[in-house]
Length: 249
Length: 321
Ligand SMILES: Nc1ncnc2c1ncn2[C@@H]1O[C@H](COP(=O)(O)OP(=O)(O)OP(=O)(O)O)[C@@H](O)[C@H]1O
Ligand SMILES: [Mg+2]
Image (cartoon, rainbow over all chains, first blue to last red; front, side, top):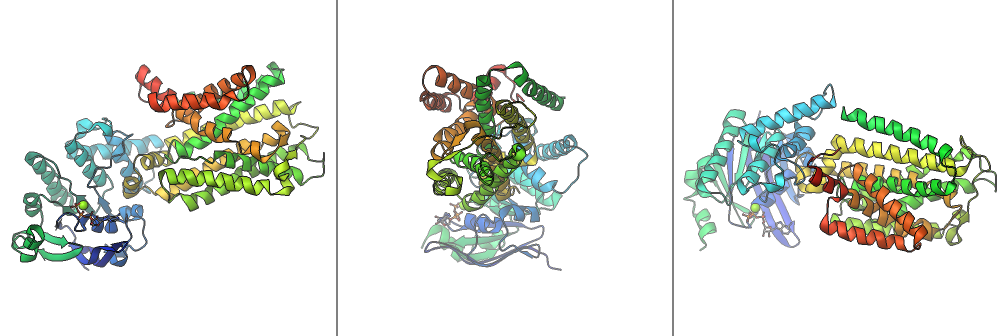
């Protein structure tokens, strides 16, 4: 029927008297590469938190794959097929890289699968997680403790761990912040591959314009909690509202 | 192969526990061993939520005392000297279930609190429970209750022997439960919660459910550990049953032993429990908390992963299980 995977309509979120999201409506289509931009504090992460269930929106509805997600806990939304990376990496620090991936693998991807024995299950988890790490170019780090990773490794781990939940929709919250140009390209390649080869819908939040413009098929710009523009990358950069939001009056 | 090593250990421990009363005839040693084994259960119970899940419970003494007072309640249902000896087998599960239910209720009320707020809530819970028991005259109120164990003893010839073997079995069983949890999906999920609760939830871990499971199992183990207490002390009153000693030890023993594996609480309880008993007899009965306090401060600063962490560091094997 519809080709819309994620539909936010009229989403409102307030913190005390402060309105962080003001009637934001956004549709993301199946298989789309979608960019979300906006100045600092414009509400991008807050919108992602409402979508992932970390925050409860005060108004509006969020529908995923035809299901209204009101009242659903984050882990239930992950099982529906939404997974996110965190802007500030949040690895499970007492675990190795592989064990980090094993958590979503066991709790989401392999949930409900019957295994002959605990050993068979552990093997399935290990192989599945290893496949993702190989794809991310992190196979050699599998048994490294996640507490000792470099910045780019942490970013990749965030994405790899989200991928281990086998999501339909991957939300990448500033996965490239603080990385060098070549590292940005590396992450971009990974995201392109996930989208094109695995058919995963991707929402990219990014301040690095070069990356988000190259990646996205469609971009939405937030400013002070309001959606101020929605267009293709080449048009959005020329949008006067967007220019004003970034450059001021 | 590792699995069978553990279960062989369990079998050996059970046989040793059953034979000990025939070899050790001095009841003083059995009583001392009972105290240490009781700490093994308490430390293990605390560790399921505190060590695996990172939720620090300051109210252990409350759950423990509720187990003890559940037993007193049953005892008081009978006329003086009329309690059948087998009633201990009712007291035990009742103490466990009552404490488990309180654990589950506490979980529902407090587990939305994070970090230190959760800990303060558990402390408050223990105070509330103590106040309730202090004002409940049926179980002796503030004056306390004298408990005379029945004249006959199930299976063994003295209550000292029976209680020792009972506590040994409880200790072995709680270690097996903790080890099972640690290696199951529950333990892995709790570890994720300990590391980063928000990330755990976003990675599909049903955090509230796991914390409630942790609270309930932990409460149950505290409760069964407390149920035999009235027969062990013969006189029970709220101040001693809710004593800080239980809460501090339940927390300190896993921290000193190593809180991420089932072995840690066992090591911590055996070492600290024995040291305290020795100090109590040889120096003074006031020394025990001082020893615990000093060791706790030392370990938190110098060896935060406890004995298990030190062993891993010096033996070089990351997973000493
Ligand atoms: N939990 C919270 N409590 C109160 N205010 C909050 C909370 N989370 C976010 N805010 C506020 O809401 C606004 C939007 O924040 P948000 O993190 O969504 O911005 P952002 O677009 O992700 O910015 P950045 O690009 O810097 O990551 C900010 O003013 C922020 O201070
Ligand atoms: Mg943000």
